[in-house]
Image (cartoon, rainbow, N blue to C red):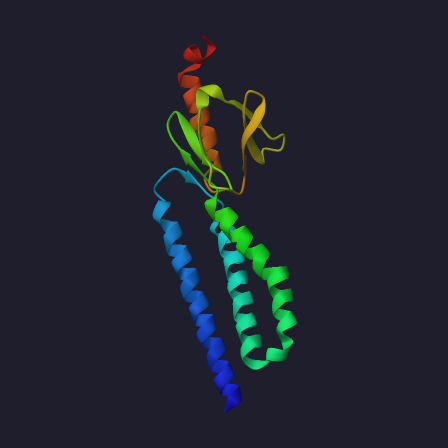
Amino acid sequence: MQFYLKLLIILVLLTLTLVLSCLVYKTDSNSEGKRVLKFPRFFRLVPFLLFCFTVICSICILLFQFEEWPYILLLFGVFGLPSLIMFILWSIWRVDIKEDGFIYRNYFGKKNEYKYAELEYQLHPKGLKWYFYKNNKKVLCVAYYVNGGDTLDRLYHKYISRHRKDIKE
């Protein structure tokens, strides 16, 4: 009977984790129609699930083997805290693309707006990253795995080709 009770508690916690992951998935799908660059859903979902798994394991250790509490500290030190930090940082980072520039929000939530006319563009030799510089200082690096990174590249080149005369003056 005690085994079934433990199994029931673990199944309830796993169900709760799946429901929370579905909520994360739904909140991410709200910005699909806009021109927004974010890390892929995989980069945000895996750390979130790893953190939930750590919490579930910690609760199970507390419920069933309380004398093993140092394992909880080990779990949170190795898996829980790093995965929570990765989830938060990769969820905050984003780039909102406009017709004449973009708004860049870094990992700490600080927003900066840049105009295409002020920026210099450089492509990685293998084509895996796009670099944007302002006054010889790197402003943004977009990797190939960021969803919609090529959209920023196309809009930058379209803007530069349309306003070439204005930029040279």
